[in-house]
Length: 191
View 1 (cartoon, helix red, strand yellow):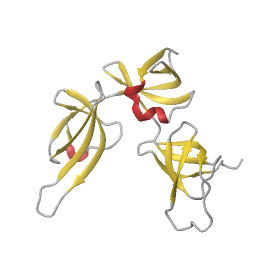
View 2 (cartoon, rainbow, N blue to C red; view 1 turned 180 degrees about the vertical axis):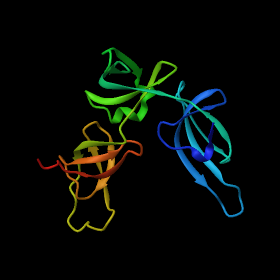
View 3 (cartoon, rainbow, N blue to C red; view 1 turned 180 degrees about the horizontal axis):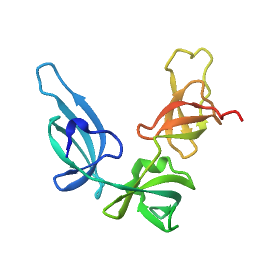
View 4 (cartoon, rainbow, N blue to C red; view 1 turned 60 degrees about the vertical axis):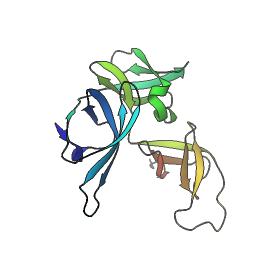
């Protein structure tokens, strides 16, 4: 059993009213005289529907064990994304709508973790951070050097993120896959 106060974002699965759901976001709230509340956004594993609700920190849930296997993203075609199992080289498809925003990070031959529930492949887990190349952005204007000034940029997969003004086309940046935000400019290690 797991308490609502122990919820963590990203690939934590619980049993909610007989349904397996993934904990997407967690916020702990406590107002002066009111009881503490844990606000969560849950995603139903089977249907993909999103549920936003709140629990008391002491509410108990049965956690669900999910098996992880290494896979490689191969390609997408006709509303399906195909992944190859790295152990037996078998290809399995998942509907694009079930993967949602994950598709904005996938590139051909990218290693991912395949998630299995009761032996059935249902989703993939991305690394926490990915290095991506900026393919489109506007040039920074001289004088816009105030801290935290951001501009819109597009990476090689089509994902749009906010980046600092000094980032230009061709730069590589580290992107947080959970929040879809810029982390830092990436520089190749010297050999």
